[in-house]
Length: 509
Ligand code: SF4
Image 1 (cartoon, rainbow, N blue to C red):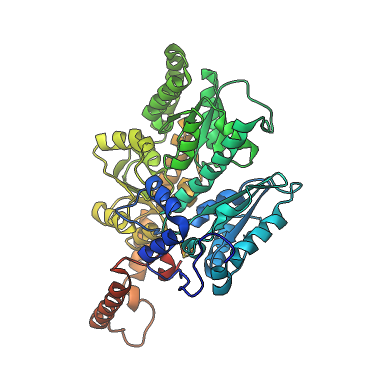
Image 2: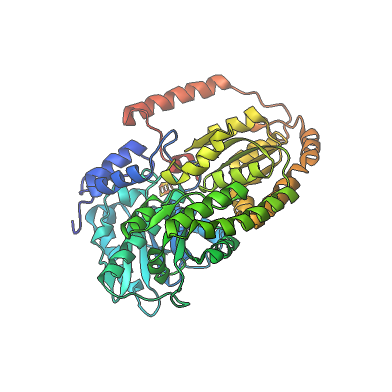
């Protein structure tokens, strides 16, 4: 064996169809215990403890693919890589995704690591790239492929190796933080060691506020306009779009954790001595509280903050009053901004009954959670799909905002529904602009109720689930067969892994 503590020859190669506990144990035995412990602390699990949406590695892949002069390489099973590249191109990557294939032999002999090292050397052309990112997926992580042994730098090109297994990182949102945090850690060391590149547009004279989270492109601009009268400027948004922006992100007066789950990134920014502020300027109350918190963190005199606040809060109240949302709404998603959307809905007049987020509870989501709970709105962190669907069933909202399966469930019940990612995250949320934009899409969806009712009536009686479609004889369900098979499967699983559920690959993508 040539590198690290990979699965020794003769031992079974971990497979992505193994149980989560099995994969974790194998990864820990293969030298990944420390990184998995860190993930467990950064991204606490429960009530659900495994991705219920896309493969989490997509978050890291997307961050790498959106950065200028950055090459991204996947190390994992071909089927996982197929799904990840497909999704990345579906989301408009327009960039090659590197892949180093492997088989059982190259995995156990350490040849895969050597192949990865060769690939990194080939890609590390300083004329082309600032950084090469290598992402270990489930099987190479469980096998202990030691990316930490890759060179740190080749001809000035930074090499960033990260493990992003589905059995260690619960959501793709948090996987964005895995890479953003690794990059900030690297950039911080560079900045501590000596001079670093200035921002492309030159250094900002005013103190800046670094923004955490992938936002609708107009939002950082709107935030910048809100900060300007305080004598502050919006810094880059993390994950950044370019390596040199990382230095600028670290060199800020304060950090606005707009998306509150960036735990590793926050650790790096705090290590650089920066204060972190949670929540965001959504709605009138959110805007007032956020400006106070930012002013405090950046040492802006309260009288100045109050002057700015009065104008912005009045403008936001005016926008909210001019764009009311009337109706019962449930909100669920996996992006980390669900609580902000719920706050804006409430201030717009909506009757929000449930907020579910696949992301965990963190100190930075506390202001929004407290605000919502004070109004009797339950907030479920690490919400499972089952909980989100149960909320739709229980509250029978006029509008369900959620992930694809939640929206599908709502539409089957003739409840107007909006995809969180495609329709809510694709609009501004902040300040007065946010109020009008959200109302437009929410009201348009609720106005469609009659069409949903008409469609439901039209398709009534065509069958659902196993009996959907056109049949000569109506199919007979055999629940007893299904039950028998379920018992067999449970017995088999108990034997191998004490009943822990398998990772998502086993259930389909
Ligand atoms: S097994 Fe699933 S979670 Fe793991 S890398 Fe493959 S697609 Fe992602």
